Amino acid sequence: MSGLYDAIMSWAADSEYIDVEHVWPLGIGLTVVLISFADVRALNHLLASLDEFTELRHLVVMALKGVGAGMIAHIAYSTSEISFRSRQTLQNEERALLILLVVGVGAGLLVDVIIPRMVEPFPFVVVQTTGLLLVAGMWYLHLLIENWNLSNEWPHLLSGLFIAFGPYIPNLV
Image 1: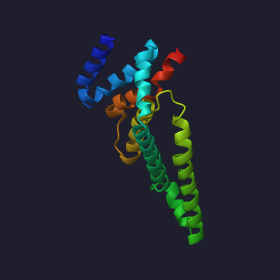
Image 2: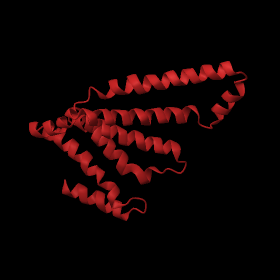
Image 3: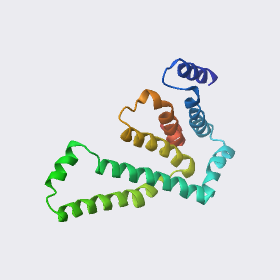
Image 4: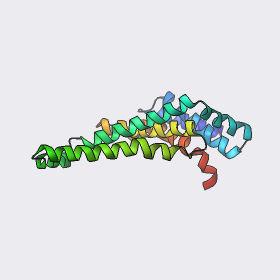
């Protein structure tokens, strides 16, 4: 495992885009994967014990809801060609209100119903939701920043995926 770590760190050091500090979250993600592979009861209990802090659990789920709502709002009100065409067809206030209601109900369903139901079955809700938050947050930044480059952010995305889905990797192998 140390050879893999050394290879990743040298790749990051050689890159003109990635600082070595950006690779450190991969250690957390790989730790979650290793804990899942080792299947040591004490380590699994350690990850699950974070779920007992209900405030922390609610905080990470609320943060994921906020990122989801922000992404919906950004997509709904972006200045794309489709939104310009839809604005031109909104000749009256009734149509505009109808579209706002549909977008609002859709965003509300995603935020208040779908996201909590999606993360509650996780074996380690706090840890895995934090990983999803990292991936969704990076995707949201991609929506907000035009010149976003995957070669800059791959360590964060990969570590978020490892954190979110690491406990399921032993089932796939």
